[in-house]
Image 1 (cartoon, rainbow, N blue to C red):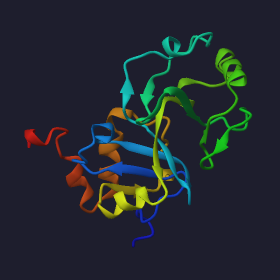
Image 2: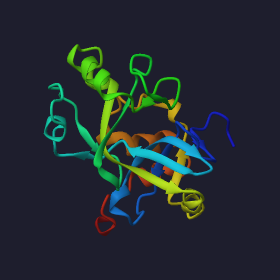
Image 3: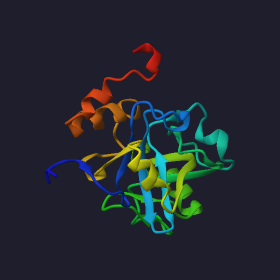
Image 4: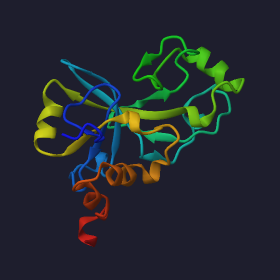
Length: 190
């Protein structure tokens, strides 16, 4: 494999899962998932590019007025709000994903950081629910070619435009993947 390739063989914390065009699961249609935790016990991640039409302040009571989109992180625990951010050094309880990304953290300090402007909307993403795989489940899906695994460090994930993320990653991946990017969301439109 070309060492400069953004496509990697095995998932790891901080990488991206990019769905193949016709995965057959509407939860993951043309999805890009940031893996926030990957271990022998399973995998957790958040869909980066599926916005929901609800405001953050409609979800959380007593939250600072903060204009940021909310994303459908995946089909698991959609009654919970999660977040990924670039301010791990300022937010106690955050779990490191990569050199530039963390997930979670203590909510009261988060409210203060948002209220004082120490976190801007391009430095945090909010998600309803998450995506999860039990031990071995993701490897079965990779074997079935449902996903490609991409090195997440090639992208500034919190600043990328979500509506173009899936296509842009596939174009950058090269090889056969730009053909995937040209696929319509509805295969009947092909």
